[in-house]
Length: 114
Image (cartoon, rainbow, N blue to C red; front, side, top):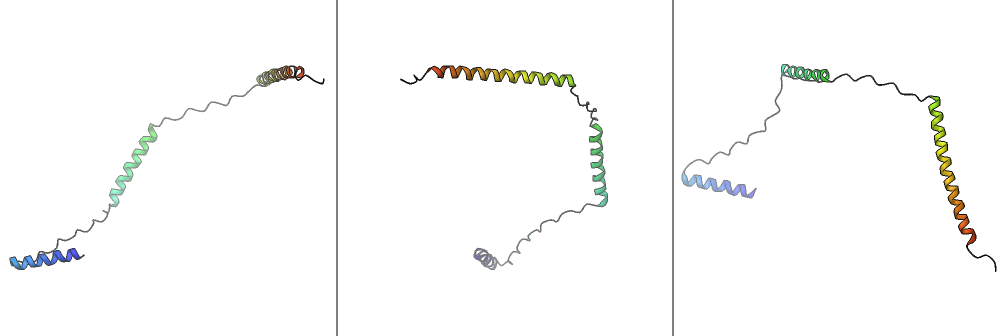
């Protein structure tokens, strides 16, 4: 603020030397308020937006009907169960064979009592 006061004092001094009145400070423009839109303008905007939505909805093709869900026949289910049981039996047999092979190799090793 001191700078402003100095500037004003210098301007007054200059004006007195030149013999003119001190210049009036430039008016500070106030920020413009928000413009108001008329009811007719709002109606035009609303109508245009409704037309855009209608055009979009019209362009969207209707979805085809969903295919009915397929059902598994009892025979098909039985086949799947049998295949699963066979697969697991094979896995269990492989594990049993592996365990038997391990027990044979560890049974003979170790020497025993003297």
